[in-house]
Length: 75
Image (cartoon, rainbow, N blue to C red; front, side, top):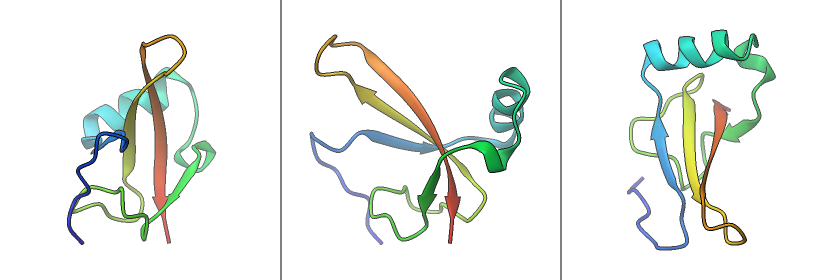
């Protein structure tokens, strides 16, 4: 599935294993506590697999600041 490139599409990146581990430790959570994103979502970057943690970087329209969200890929 080709990567979507659109000015309204927030940037989606796959976290490296080290970064994913640090994220979970920082917030003292397990991977199942993260919000989910389906493997069929067209916004996922190429190479995303079930269990990967996706970093979503959005620009807040109200404040103009970048806001980061995390999702775990599920079936």
